[in-house]
Amino acid sequence: MQKMNDTFPYMPLMAFAMTGFICIMTETIPAGLLPEISKGMNISLASAGQWVTVYALGSLFAAIPLTIVTRSWNRKYVLFMTVAGFFIFNTITALSSNVYLTLLARLGAGAAAGLAWSLLAGFSRRIVEPLHQGRAMAIAMAGTPLALSLGVPLGTWLGHYLGWRLTFGIMSVLSLLLMIWIRISVPDSAG
Image (cartoon, rainbow, N blue to C red):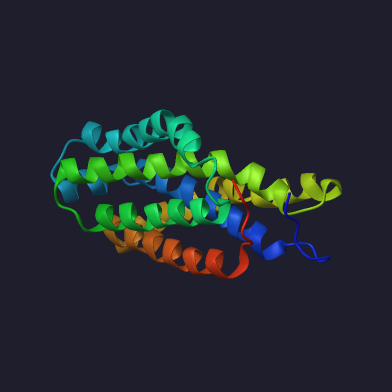
């Protein structure tokens, strides 16, 4: 069990929280922008709604297999790769005009989320002493309520005013910045 220095690891834990924020935002942004996505992709509202469904299916079907495959890998590397997945798949979503490619990107983003959710709680506990594990998990998981209460309305607002493609582009930029943050602040931890 690897532990951080004597100081509490706020920066890595906030990177974990930001990962959760990006997971939730990537999943829910389409729900608030269905008319815009429908018009922009020239598809029905029901087809645009499948973007959320396909993401959820990616999480459902990939979480356990990806967790098993990566269980012996360095946790920092796995976290970095999940966020890199968000960068790639949100960029494809922002730029693609092909419905099937976009659905495939949404499936991939869901798979990245499934792996991220399987990783965050355990990783947050590993980098602190047992006495601080509850606090570490609370910080690491804070991205979820923040995304649901603030991020989703903000994402919908941005989508209405800047367009849904630019909103997904912003998610890509946030993912890229988070990759740098992870690289700098998150400690290595064996699988």
